[in-house]
Image (cartoon, rainbow, N blue to C red; front, side, top):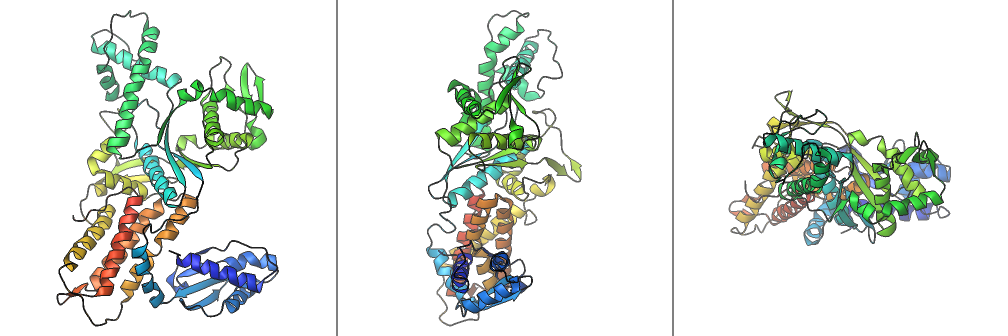
Length: 540
């Protein structure tokens, strides 16, 4: 269905074409008004046009409104300084949208990304330990964004990138091996730089080694490395699929990039652009030519290839070989300085502005004002799996979704364990369950035949429901997935307010227009929860 913002934008485009026929076509954006006093919808197009037509913004706005004339869906439209055009929609028009919401098979879907492919890469935790709370932020934001991009018409590939080579894997294997020796009663030291936590003992317990020589530590380590890595990856995949209910389209291994010689192909492109050079036995990429603060090493002096080269090869494979139109990648806060070099590489390869990097900030688990830190399994932090087991997947997802991944977060463990309306996810889910309960009751009662005056709380609920398609469009553009959580709270609040003020079943009969309102509210609330990957229970 055509949303109010789209319809009003088209009307404004027509007014611009009439009022300023010599002006080239411009994009018109109509947004929800921030304050109801200023209408239901608003546009700043007059301020954008002012320098182009060399008129004051207020004059442009008045000119456009005069050209627009009477619009049946509006009670009025007005100009506000410094040049906004504010629209007030009629209640009658709002009520006419309810049947359309119910009839729309894919309410909220758009074709913004039609015929375009996008990769959303998220989590991508190293296979050297359990998943952390920080991984959870990227996991749920990325998974939700993938759902949003699908609704916005993109062909979405959800991908997990596994760093399965390098020194970190050597350290992992040695950690497991030394714990194995200790479990066999063989005196073995355990340096502090090795991985800590009970999970190392769990992996060691799965090893069954034949005869070995104690002095041949490195040889044994290299022999068991692939087995240890397989155990860790299996554990990661179990957590992601079974505990987080996330299903990736691809699990991409760093080692696979080198097996396909994608690093060599990407390097050939960089060499052809004369942006690599030798210095101190190492191979460097002149990223400063593309805005980075310093040049970066691709291959170290000892021949070891860096993660940066792997990341370049990965992007080249996605954009050049697979013809991906766009990529969104979620990285931890410690990777903030990595953005410049990645974007430099994209520019050098000819894929400038096709990569979006979302930085996921740190999260603290708090209870009664104190930080919860210790975990028997991980050693010094609470794992994501432990959190999900403690509060439930729906609660974990919703609480993470309440905060932008770009900001620091305190996870309220005490509130998350509350099974009442104080807990925001239960508040939203209870609204859905209550609607389902009412709809079940309405099947047994006849309709009222008369008319009843429609109440402001009913109209407010409709306005809230009509925001959903615009929200999908907005989040697909700015990736601010937290807005979906706040929208679900707004929609639930609008329903609870309607329920408190209006009788749906009155004198053993139901008002038909309120039945329709319930059906639409149930549909939109369930859709919102589904996009966030959260269940919509029919009873609680």
